Amino acid sequence: MNQKSLVIAILVAASAVVVLFIFQNSKRQDSDLAQSLSSPPGPSSNHEPGHALNRTPVTAGKDGRQTIAADSSINEELQEKYAEVSDNAGYPELENRLEAMQTRRGGKSFDPRQVVETMTQTEAWTRVETPHDDLPLTQEEKFDGREYIRFNPMRIETLMPGDTLEIPIWQLGERYTMRVDHTETHANGSVTWHGHLENFNDPHRVTITVGDGLSLGGIDTPGGHYVLQAHGESGWIASSETLFKRNEAETDMIIPPAGELEGNS
Image (cartoon, rainbow, N blue to C red):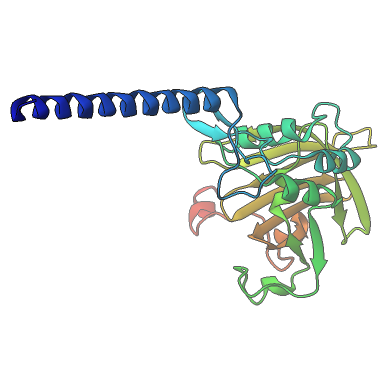
């Protein structure tokens, strides 16, 4: 065999080896692909083996924006606790309440556990002895008969039509029960809860509005009308008569300017 024939033989043998290698590698890749398609994915390196990935459900709202599903962190234990504190047939599931809360606040999300914990409170405010320094009150107003409170706006936030809330009025020594009738969302983003006091023949209306840092309320009771105002968690309740009482030393008679009576004599 001459040198030229030897070189050709070596090239043919090398080509055969390369073809065989490519064929075997292709079979191995096809086998791996088939196994990956027929088997469930294994756990990610960021999760412990045996734990499912925590995927947060995402839904599209009416405006096309994506929002987190209300039930992303609701478990059976939390639902059972919710059932203990809510007897509202209109919202049998915690998810129903969260979706309604989110809708009236323009898509704002709420922590399900915080909502349930807040609902265990029967009232939305408690009495405190002294006014908070941040309240915009004059020195005279601080001692005009107001009762000072610690206000919980989240407790109002959780209320739905059909829910009840205790309304303590310490000046009257009474604790009323408010039944929520409906809610109203305003253009500025604030929300008003409209309701009435139960167990009375005459209507006694209650309105509570929660805005950005400021909450206002009006409570019509058998003992008179009461006003609530809270800046964040600090606030007060007072009788309308106390706030707008007339000075007995002043007259409400309208006196004409000097000279007008003379022309009529």
